[in-house]
Amino acid sequence: MKYLPLVWAMLWRRRARTALTFASISMAFLLFGLLNAFGSLLATGAKVAAADTLITSNRYGFTKSLPYAYRSRVDAVPGVKVAIPVVIIPFVYPDGSSSNQPSMATDPEVVFSADPRFVTTPEQLKAFQETRTGMIAGRQLAEKYGWKIGDRIPLKSPWLKRRDGQEHWEFDLVGVFDFNEELMGKGVSAMRAFVRYDYIDAARATPGQVDVYFVKIHDPASAPAISKAIDAMFQNSDRPTKTQSEAEQQRAQLAEIGDIGLIITAILSAVFFTLVVVACNTMMRAFRERIPELATMKTIGFTDRTVSALVTAESLLLCVSAGLVGLLLAWLALKPVAKAIAGVLPLLRMEPETAVAGVALAVALGVISGAIPAWQSARLSVVDGLRRS
Image (cartoon, rainbow, N blue to C red; front, side, top):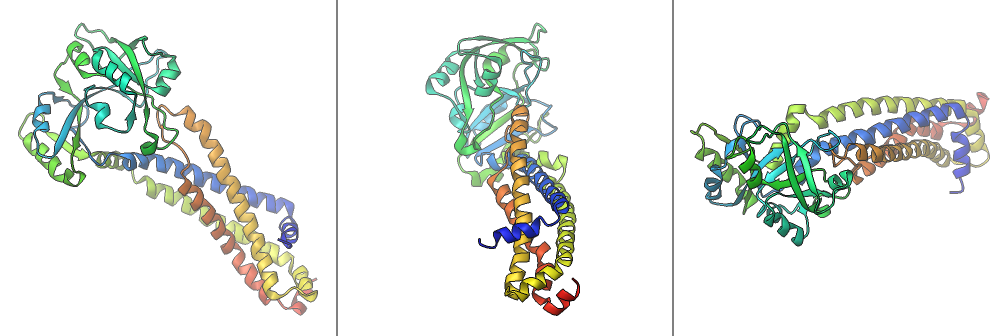
């Protein structure tokens, strides 16, 4: 620590150059934090997917429905705990917007007991099971529109019309739910609602249909066998099925976008390669300018090892401090962004692993950029150094 003022003075000998290099490194780590946050977000769906849940949909896509009559047959497949029918409903809310977390019409008797990711109170769950027009809304969704338990909620869905051709639906808010923080982590915004399948199905223009089945199974290890058994059962029907785990379904959706991890890695690799060149050039120029000073330091008693360590410390101080500032800026920037898009991407945040990896990269950058100047400092002879003064 006694050499810290000296290292600091060496670092800011050329203020403009140091400031520009510091800003470049900070911006690179800001980009690193943001890109990794979005990459983690897209991969989180597979991470939090329930291992004991399969998704059965129409083989020809989610836009095609399945008969409700399939439910009893899926329930009878060995290893299946329960098949939960789901109708996906993109409601239009009072302000004219629709959430990218679509609401679901489902079986009130099993949905919350079968899926621990959604948490509500026993009293509110009982009210949902006893109220045909009941709705349980996500806490953030209810807070956004000022809904209170007991309110009558009018909503609109052009995608789900009633038998009389109307698009308007009315529900009684009987409860709110949160995402389970132990499974999903903190800060996940619940911007969807659950309503009852029997109420929706009795009133809509095309009854007896479901969009997907969430199939809960006893043993996750038997998921491939159960998936094959379900699909084989309906293979020759007019509406064949495709059954896969939640994680597989998430990966399939990501595959349609592309290899996000590879894209992010390629971008960051290019950025950090450029950054290494910039940092190395900065440290080499600083070393060449200070050759007489380093030689003078050796004449007054600084050893080769000490001079080399000071040069390395200078590089580390620059890179690590700039890296920390960049990561802090990314963390601060993600907070308002995450809040603004919570209804679309509810899991946007910087993971601790990203911060740890960023610090490790900053240290590596400091060591690499300071390696050659430190080596040359150790080999510098006093005579050659003073000759350049």
